[in-house]
Amino acid sequence: MSLSVRQIEVFRAIMLAGSVTGAARLLFTSQPTLSRELARLENLSGLRLFDRQGGRLLPTAQALMLLEEVERSYVGLERINSLVQSIRRFEHGQLDLTCLPLFSQTLLPRVCKRFQHEHGGIGLCISAQESPLLDESLSAQRHDLGLIEGDQVPRGTRGELLFSADMLCVLPDGHPLLERQRLALEDFQGVAFINLAGRDIYRQGLDEQFRSAGIERHTVIETTSAASVCAMVREGLGVAIINPLSALHEAGRGLQVRRLEVSIAYRVMLIRPEFRPSSGFVDAFCEALKVEAGELMERLEDLG
Image 1 (cartoon, rainbow, N blue to C red):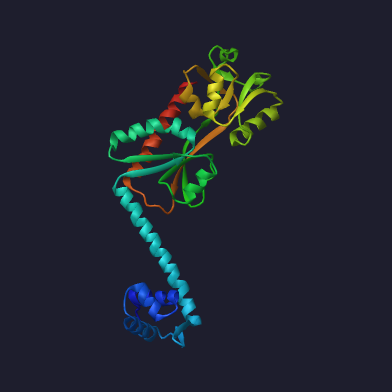
Image 2 (cartoon, rainbow, N blue to C red):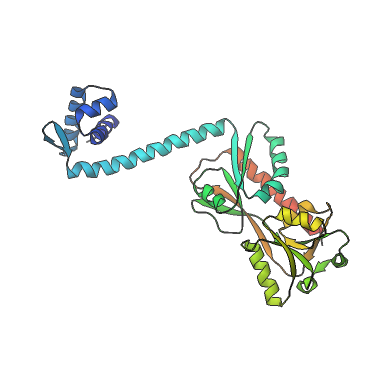
């Protein structure tokens, strides 16, 4: 027995319409044609799919079981159509990336420059957003690539460690602590401090380090972004401990950078969707990211 796609289409239309006449309208064909197709389907399958009552077709238990599988197949067809649309976008040269705002400000500009030099015909769309929206959009397969902090990979994706380095201290020009090449936690006792917002995972880890050491910082300002923290430090309002990407980006712009004696690791993960088509230029962009990450690590080593 081999059922045709047309026969399955007829069966689904009858189930939706409740009658052969209604199904014929859905499929833009005649009622006698559909009646013949239905009879052929029941004959080939050996199933009694409908009971006839007063001009209506009532689905049997066998029909309901078959419909469940047919609907799953139609969902698969919709996914195939979506895949076709994605492939078309690739052929037209569009790469869609999402990330935290700080990556669009620090890491990506040089990566995009490097990538565009080699692949000038490829358009780039960068969507900067915060968690949890960032994780949700990656799980929904809406983007070709993603960049996240930490090591919690969103469901439906696979992650690769792109960058890992310790948090750094940023200080305004002329600050007394600049006399030291590396700063201990004790050096921050009573020092005016600019902090990230309390819900930031790295702020929480930092607080735990100071709490364990019994050090009381003088927190004067809390803010939600590393860029804002750096602006406050530049104005001489205090010092801060931030991610190394932002610290390197701002170094020399009225700010100085120092390493810490303690290690507070900061990680960036490169995220790729499990169920979205890839292409050669997505791989090329990943390679550009890795090259830039390597160069940033070399700059960090130069700090001593």
